[in-house]
Length: 319
Image (cartoon, rainbow, N blue to C red):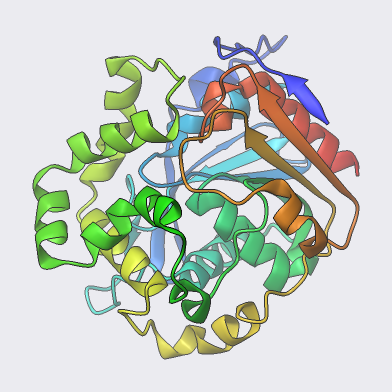
């Protein structure tokens, strides 16, 4: 299914409430190992929707999507992932671990803290991988799924497999982060690094300095560098991860099917590394649709094509 999506701004016009204003109100709650910062807007009795951002982005990717969904009656929760924004670890002793299953466990802990039994999950980049993992490991908690770039579950063993040179080149930053120089460079130039990734991942997205600067504040989190380095080093097998997540990783290494109703999304001009849709279709065993967002849409569809993303969430909730 191909949708035409304009990259211009999409403004929700709720009849009786300014949900866009509510989006600026970040709340905090203890959830698992974190004190999580999150936005929570829309009717409390509405269908819960949890939207997850990627790296190096933040909750502002959903600044247009979340109010639009809230105006349609959904309860929309948009958390800062570990290492972003106002999210903090409760203990200095907790490893600053960026392995994917840890972030998925964070989402389940947040759902428990908010007393949300089941939600529609949506995400891109790290957020899509996290949503995929929650759907695979805790399917009873996921009503339906919206995943940009589809099935992103992997394993350290798969991460060791060399790719063709052109594909390896797309992952340049992963190899950079494997070095001490890379860690120091990212720490010294975090904002400049993030802007470069935005430009490479979405070459057709003409975002403003104001748009970037608003999101880049979330990267000033004291754990941002450690979490980012950990995430990419774990993928290459350079970090072991925490033992308490070992059972999750063992299951994920089998590349389990995702059984919940799913809509996968790809932008027609995604400059980031991503699998082709035909390579992951078989990984989804429930109701399924794929949508390609056209109109020069890159790696961050909720920000670049908010109207189409809102529609995908609505349609996924109805599958």
